[in-house]
Amino acid sequence: MLTFNRRQIIGLGVGALAASAVAGRLPAAANNINGYVRSTLARMTLPEKVGQLMVQEVYGVDPTVDDARNLGKYGTAKAVDVVRDLHLGGVIYFAWTDSYLNGPDGVAKASNALQAASAERRVTNVKGKPQGTKVAVPLLVATDQEQGIVTRFGAPATQFSGAMALGAGRSESDARTAAAITGKELRAVGINTNFAPVADVNVNPANPVIGVRSFSSDPALAAQMVAAQVRGYQGDARVSASAKHFPGHGDTAVDSHYGLPLITHSREEWERLDAPPFRAAIDAGIDMIMTAHLVMPAFDDSGHPATLSKPILTDLLRGELGYEGVVITDALDMAGVREMYSDAEVAVRALEAGVDILLMSPAPLAARDAVLEAVRTGRLSEAEIDAKVERVLRMKHRRGLLNDYLVDTARINSIVGTPEHLSIADAITDRTMTLVRNDGMLPVQVSGRRVLVAGWGVGTTQLVQAAFNEAGATTTRLNYTSPTAANIAQAVAASQTHDLTVVLTHNVNQAQINLVNALTATGKPVVAVAVRNPYDVGRYEAPAEICTYSYSPVIAPSLVRVITGEVNPTGKLPVDVPSPSGGLAYPFGHGLSY
Image 1 (cartoon, rainbow, N blue to C red):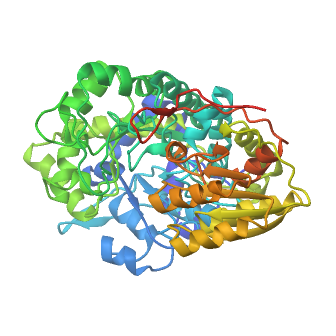
Image 2: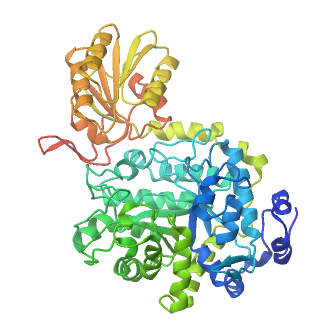
Image 3: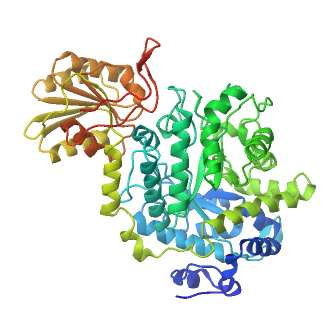
């Protein structure tokens, strides 16, 4: 295997380094973490240090090819040049950045090219002055692979049904295994950082942004699942995990992407409801904690969101909870953090509050310059910057990035979406399916029968239809997001010529409720399936009701296995499901079996 010392690897061109991807390692430096951190910090310029505190999205399938979106945001068209010029500490992948367009092999090649660029930093100009000493520090390559409704890396990668489904399964072992498989497949394509698990406790059924991304409304169950996933990501897969969103986003009716939520929990309520999963994550050795763009007056009555709050991030998180790892912001392009200050000022205030990494500044050049100016004027000391960079470097060392940051593309197919991983995902999903109502109609034989699949989701109804076809049924599909009276009449008529109707709901609205009720009124066998929030099943009454917690492709075969009795459902509700009257339709822990 090829190896390089630090001077050799710094001197390599991008092409030469990329061609040496099989090496994938920086000098043996990194064997001594304290020595590595001290020597690296000593040789870094201030712009390089500030760059380590920034993780940004970059655009394009191939980071070595011009993309106008990079030019518009960063002043340079190639993603590799963005990494070099800003001395970025990390990048983040999304579908909308085209990072996943070329499948696992394309993701891996892009990761290698970006890592090569990071290892070949060049002298750049900041306000007309040359800067940069080409200190090679591998990138954090990040994504949000929570699984379930927040899944960035799709098929052929193994899919799971997400956090609340795992909460319904009640198995710490399954939660850890799901994280381990997810993390190993991410690492196989060069993604070494996952912004998961969600540590929010979803106590508000009307929460528009968390919901099934949370494991549970029960703090103890959520804490168990969070700790298990931290161990799966970090211990089993060597991928940095990030517990989010501190101090807790589970009790809000406002989406912080579009506004600034207010959490009115008292100190005592926070200790009881919000804190346990974050404490569990810290105890499990979490690498990062992500901030929330929300106001919590119990800890800071200034009106500042937690991302900009020293009382929350420094006094509470570091001081009281004793957290010593990396603090990263939620995306800084979200409305919740942009209401009070300019994007440049937000960057400085976040660092002052106790943040280490700025995620996705919408004005990255202005943010960088504002931080440099804050150090020049003494508003931020270079010692403070050094302490933040040190935490980042220690995290990179801890996850083995210094000796293993390039991807062997020949190994991808033996890791990503393997039959073994897919089989495990199926089995875990089977154990999460929750049957909440059954008037004696399930299980039901479908082989040779006619099945109508109706309701929400073009892709989801297609997947469920395909799973019934695989089970030997003859199927018809009618897709309605918000069914009209004519749609409902069509579905009712169709149900008369079918032996079973399966109707899917998603964040149920009145039109969907009307569809379920009309189908139920026919007296024909009907199964209503909530394919996202379990709260749907409190809004209607069908002969049988099932919660899947997700519309991930993995749920369709499991759903059919439960309906046919091939799998005996064992999932238990991880939340209370309220009824429209204000009482409980189904309590936490409810779940039926055959």
